[in-house]
Image (cartoon, rainbow, N blue to C red; front, side, top):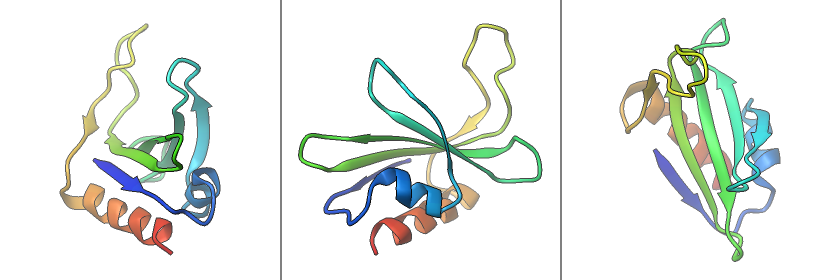
Length: 101
């Protein structure tokens, strides 16, 4: 699920940390920042966000739910949920509320 914000009063890093997201890594090729937040007791399932900011300061978040770790060695494929239903929709609303303050 893609979410777009502009005119933020704080950095995406700080806002996502307030929401319980942990910084994972920065993609050297795209510049995207990767964040995750547990959705259960273990490492998976987890909410996963890729964040990027353009030259005008607009922030783009790509949110999905990782159901499990990648199954095959050397592969980044996993069972992810995308869209705007159920817990993913509820999490998107929570993120929107924090980013819109």
